[in-house]
Length: 390
Image (cartoon, rainbow, N blue to C red; front, side, top):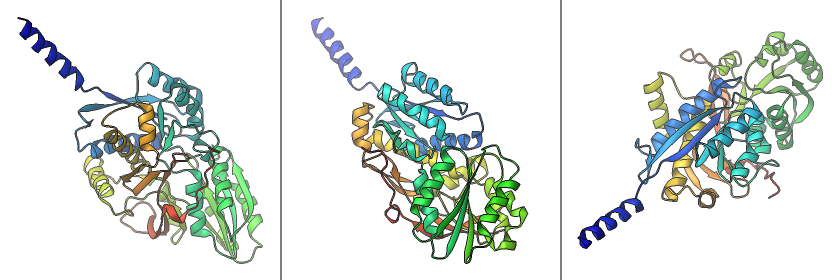
């Protein structure tokens, strides 16, 4: 009898030792609100990234990955309570999100309070991995400096005069500041900031034209804009009569329909499905066409990168979700994404990554202006400042 009991106890102890647990990932993002279109892409990309990186099993080391969705509604106060609830009530091991920068900045202290990782994707403001950063914050999404510096690399030539047009909030102001700081040769003569809900660009355009029209050489209005409103309407006011051209970074495909009116327009982009050539992107593009009958977009690639980063980190820890173990694993970690290799910089946990200098081509097969690759701007070609005073 005693022998049986021992055997039973032994069997029990060994099953508990290898008992797999669910790894809970909370996706806290702006599912509804002004950035809904971006948010949906991130969600699709995140799920595809987890699928791809786990070889379709949705498990790491026998532990099932469970994704919990939380809607910030694009509101900072809602975001704080949703992230708190994810960590406290849902017992999330790690969180991903959000979409908007203002929302992200509100969430950073919550990650620190609960001592759990928040992987920021795709909010862009520099402050997230800059002065508002804490050690629980990692970011796969690009930051304003990466956007701005890559665009500066594309436009920064002697004899170029630039005026900027941006939205009057963190994303716009950070973007312009980083862009300005990155220019070595071109000159900025005017910064125009308009409310995020602007629909009539006439007055702003007039100020931009006036600041540039009498300048010699190449004259460029550089646009940094997200969400609603179409700043490209300023083209209807005919800046060409002053020899003024328009430039901007990449964007989601629907927004790039406006680029069709600007063949030859140059800029730099975070992602366009036709540019990177690597196994992860090949899978993403073909799989996305299969599932959704259209190509993956800007934020789909970002979501996928976040999913891959999480799985790679968890594989390295053997499925251990201990925060300290994850932080030490992720600092300096490289992983393969649809954009090629990304590396979490040790100092501020910002993912160092390539950007792409493009020129717009009009192709009747596509409803948007097609960004053709001029050159890949590699991580080492951009001097991305560390801004967190760590």
